[in-house]
Amino acid sequence: MVDVEKFRVLIVDDVAETRENVRKLLQFESDIDVVAAARTGREAIQLCQEANPDVVLMDINMPDMDGIAATEAIRQKMPAVQVVILSVQGDQNYMRRAMLVGARDFLTKPPMPDELVAAIRRAGKMAREERAKSIQVYAATQGSPNRPTTTTLTTRGKIVLVYSPKGGTGCTTIAVNLAVALHNQETRVVIVDANLQFGDVAIFLNEQGKNTVIDLAPRVDELDPEIVDSVMIKNAASGVHVLASPSRPENAEKINADQFSKLLRYLRHLYAYVIVDSSAYLTDVTISVLDIADAIVLIATQDIPSIKNDRLFLDLLLTLNVPTDKVTFVMNKYDKRIAISPEKVGENLKQRVMAVIPLDERTVIPAANRGVPFMLDNKNAPAAKGIYTLVEALRAKLVKRDMEESEAITKR
Ligand SMILES: Nc1ncnc2c1ncn2[C@@H]1O[C@H](COP(=O)(O)OP(=O)(O)OP(=O)(O)O)[C@@H](O)[C@H]1O
Ligand SMILES: [Mg+2]
Image 1 (spheres, rainbow, N blue to C red):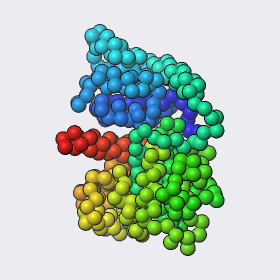
Image 2 (cartoon, protein in one colour):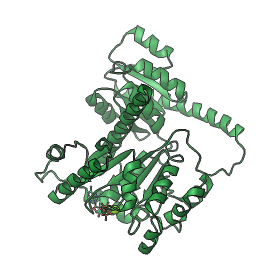
Image 3 (cartoon, rainbow, N blue to C red):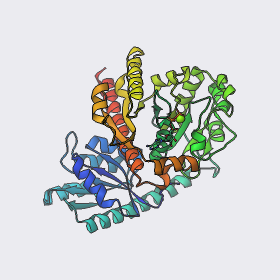
Image 4 (tube, rainbow, N blue to C red):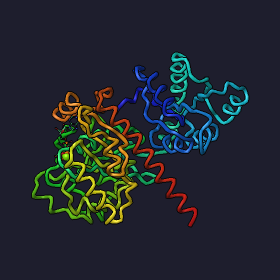
């Protein structure tokens, strides 16, 4: 499992610069991992459920919901999570209110690095002790020790399609590393290879399992969590589950779009994220995913054919009535020597580039050849920083869509 020993930290602040400063302060602490950042109180609550932090560093004054109300909600929903308030207000009154709603500690901004790290370690230990207690209670109420690793989720997971209409732009690289970055013990991730002829997701993770999507898709109407669990390849290095493409290209035809999309809809009850990697060629299978995807990560590189194809793809979404606000637009293999900038591409396609992943041959190519995603063992590499930005942008997009959806439901 990844980083089980590290204290997982969520930063909450509406000012990007403050979030970045705090992240920088913590980046060299080997026992601390910043797993997510939120801009508002509401986003903090949502991200807490997804990213499962031990410690939340919480600002007080934020738009929509302030840090005190967010702390109260987090402590009620997830009592093990510990909140450290970081605020410019040195005021006793704030401190008292924060403590009353369950905050663990209170630091004045900007925090002294030593104080901040010490506060995170104290709160992190407390979070672990609380978790250990609740696990003991849970274990005492459960029967069989051989329960499958797949259990049903209470909320619906998110289907994220990673797509590029031009081949070789880094779709599989991004899908695999995104899956690794999103996965943790509580937020379980499966990556599904929708490139049914020449899929290479399993290779990127150094897995040569016998089981593939052929073992699930044709019997999609009779699935249960145990069958799914028995077919999934469990990548030990990352914890991510993998549903590989058929072992021979001619077997691709054995799966139709209807089975495939039903299968993904089933999987979202078992995993917090279902990441789908696809080929550039738009098959019926990929088209069926456009409709059910909660988010589409669309990739561009700095060349005209890629940009032209992205434009055609965005037009196609409109034709198919798929909302283009599902798209999180990413530039991969970014090379600052090339004049086509992310801003220009964003303007041209009317889709802002939300994350830029640099051209980083020293990291990306060896990682693919070794079958070890760089998000596992090379988290400070330039390409890894790009993936973190993508994770943040994607989470923010999903939170926003969720809020809009629930507002629409309450208005009905
Ligand atoms: N940011 C990057 N920096 C350097 N090399 C990269 C980067 N992203 C991807 N690559 C390299 O580009 C090549 C294509 O990447 P990848 O296989 O992920 O693309 P793809 O879009 O999935 O391709 P396909 O169309 O074959 O499915 C690989 O050699 C990969 O290592
Ligand atoms: Mg690929």
